[in-house]
Amino acid sequence: MWENYFIKKHGCERVRKEEDRGDFKKNGRYYEYKSSGYNQDNSVHMLQIRPWQDCDYIIQSITDDGATTFVLTHAEMMFEMKKLNASPAHGTKEVVADNEKIEYMMRLKEILRIGIDGLTTITKIMIFSIVKHIFYMQKIRIKNRMEIDKMKRSGQAAAKVLQAIAETIQPGITTYELELVSRKTISELNAKSSFLNYVIPDHPPYPATICVSVNDYVIHGIPNKMEILKEGDIIGVDSAVSVDGYHGDNAFTFPVGKVSTEAQKLLDVTKDSLYAAIAEAKPGNRLGDVSFQLQNVAEKAGFSVIDNFSGHGIGRHLHEEPQVLTTGKQGRGTRLRPGMVLAIEAMVNAGDSSVEIENDGWGVVTSDGSLSAFFEHTVAILSDGPEVLTESPIWRKI
Image 1 (cartoon, rainbow, N blue to C red):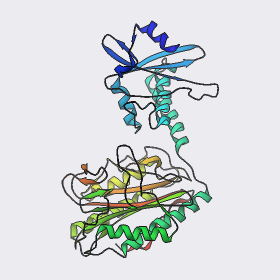
Image 2 (cartoon, rainbow, N blue to C red):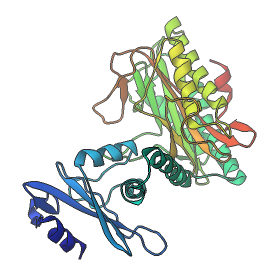
Image 3 (cartoon, helix red, strand yellow):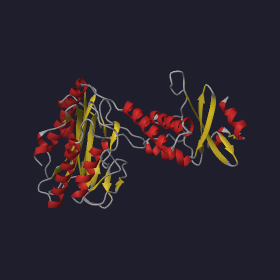
Image 4 (cartoon, helix red, strand yellow):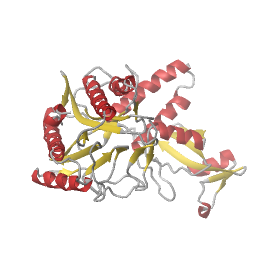
């Protein structure tokens, strides 16, 4: 019905299925037809995004009063999806991986282009910000005291894995031996690894229970039987486990024997930046206050922060909303509320901030070969301030 409406209104011709480029064609240009409408309960009754290269997107709002139409270019659609960190499906897949974020985008587009055309730009921006905040906060899972207590148990289990690894690290051992220590400890704790066989798009399943990052490795290094630690190395170890259905996530960069003055300074500054960020994780502050400290402490010391990766919310899922960026402005971003639980990550390079992905699809290394340090805590925001759920004695020994 609505597709026939478009053919008649826009003078389009239907594209044969085998062309697989879009739904319609006009003047040599392809269009992808998309529709979003509301049921009586305000739910969207159809929402699919399949970005085809060079296609424009016909977006149609279907209401009781009829249909309203506007067109987004491919570049506009990709820009909006990138801002929302959405992962579009390609090829023959029909539904985007994160429909909720696309639904949000569609609703905002309808508001900005259809519902409030008569308002000033400033008013539109204010409404945009309010709607975005309401939608975004609905996606952040607020934990009650019982859930936070469960997360403290998983956080302490993850911390014990790092403690066991700290007692093992010395020159001459392999990073795979650290993996064996991790597996043994997780088993003794009756916990489950959050990393083992973890899958993200376009990556093979992660094959280990910890990530090990030696020297210029930033994050996500895979333990290796051939990788032998040497005196003066630094090694970041990231461990996450689940207990009773809740995850705890922490990371620590260890010195291997005696390290250089530069390496020790990098470790000290990175840890300090993490704790400065944690101090800002309290009700009434904003995510930007947390991110600002990660960036400010590192850059004041002459180092750079990794801005390609970020911390995250955590709970029943290892990765939840919100993203906790490593750069930010004070007073900006989502307002923090009691019951939010964040995995705050400090990732700092001694040299340039640029990084590259290794051929295994997981490892991230500094582009200039400089040292990198990584520290992470799981932090619950309580009414009286932050509580670190992954604290352990190793943090007082560096």
